[in-house]
Length: 251
Ligand SMILES: C[S@@+](CC[C@H](N)C(=O)[O-])C[C@H]1O[C@@H](n2cnc3c(N)ncnc32)[C@H](O)[C@@H]1O
Image 1: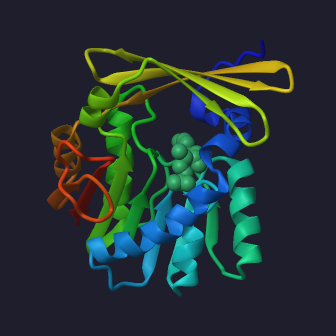
Image 2 (image 1 turned 180 degrees about the horizontal axis):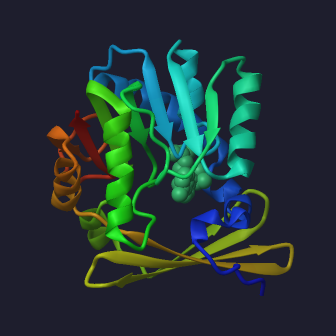
């Protein structure tokens, strides 16, 4: 079995390459087009400048740019930025792509909307690093600007928890996901085994899991106000039927 190199898991490009077809199947790009319309309605966005932080393959950046918005997509994985560039090229839109670590990227008072979507937050071992990311986003927003964060909420994980899940992928490969809740329900430790062409590749990664209240407190602690929580992009409450934990805050 191939083992993951040591270091921060999210900096291992092989992880994003090997899991690409599972994480970003074509229907997920279609979902993003619909979600962008919902997000714009949910936050009543009337501005022009958008930061798509951890933009990955541009699922959200490209449809935003197609709407005529000025979009900056930031990500640290070159493989995914290449996919994003390709997509923007084939859709004939311009996006500013920047390779950077979310702990470092900051452009003072540049954007009216900042997005952190599809569990792109909570990657770091130290809570100070998550806070640094939120401070960067806050600094990068214009006064009155809006942040939308979308993660898998702790309450949702607790309700639907399975320690193991397996998925068949269209190319015949399989992904087995094993999960463990650690640190008193603060973190989730994941092991993913990708079985492809007779080879098993093994990846381990950990995320901080936020409850609705914890995420709200974090946002408020760096200066966001009017923080509201939702259970989907339609704006339904973050309650028992929530599919995602979505926090919206204003600078
Ligand atoms: C689950 S994907 C979500 C991608 C995109 N938001 C979407 O919804 O399709 C998480 C993204 O975070 C990026 N990422 C992980 N760690 C990062 C870091 N420290 N700084 C910047 N980007 C990072 C990954 O490269 C990946 O594109």
